[in-house]
Image: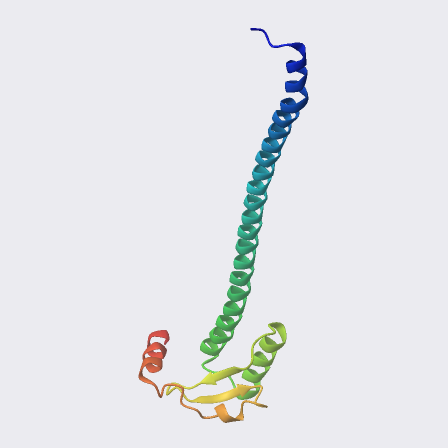
Length: 144
């Protein structure tokens, strides 16, 4: 039996929009999911890039600060020590050039803090023995 034209028209009017609508919804959901995955991938890439950039900047800043302190210690070694005024000039220059330092201290061979720049606000640290705890003394000995 062949479907009548009326049945075909009914089917066309009822089911065809449902099928087309379902297909459009499925395609929309698929595209939406694909865009969501692409967006998450892009976010991960941006976060990874930012992490690498920040890590490099921190490393660069740290390396610069370490190099400046090493230059100061080499001057000390080359001259067999520095006078307190000359050491203070170097320390003040480092504090000026590298913001973020709270203080720069000169510690003697017995691990007592002898000179501090700036002294204001750091008076309590003057003559302090920083090797009073065994683990800290061990770390200082290794660093020496």
